[in-house]
Image (cartoon, rainbow, N blue to C red; front, side, top):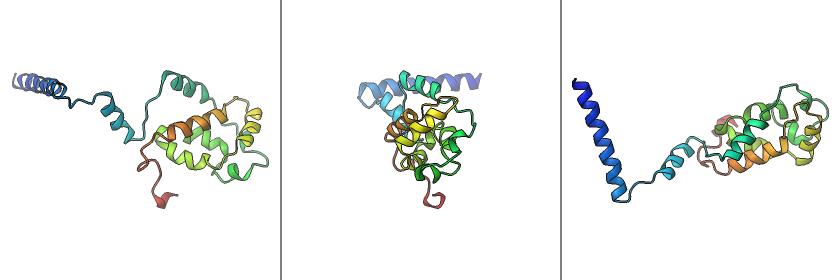
Length: 149
C-alpha cells in the first residue's frame, strides 16, 4: 500500500510540475525532445524520409559494386562501396563517419555502380540523404575520436 501511495504522489507531483512549467512558459515540448535525441546523433525523419529509408536498404551484399576498377574515392573506403551501403548508411549515429567516407565518392561513379546493382540500390539518392541528415547532427558527436580515424 505504501508503494501505491508513493507512486500516486510521484505521478501527481510530475503532473503539477508539467502544468506549472506550461503556465510560466518554460515548457519546450517537441524542441526539447529533438534536442535530447540530437545529442545521440538521432534526427527526426519525415514520413517521406522513413519511406525512402525503408525502400533504399535493399543491398544484398553481392559484392558486384566492389569488383573491377573502382575510382580512387571508392577504393579508399575500407571494403569498397558495399560496406558504405550495408553499414554506415543504415545507422543514423554512424552518419557522421559516413559523411567522411561519402565525401570521397563521385556521383558519376555511383551512377555506374547503380546500373550494375542487381538490387537496384539508389546509391546516389542514399548518399544525398545521408549528407542531408548528416548536416543536422550534433557536430561535437558526429565524428569519431581522432584515434579511430
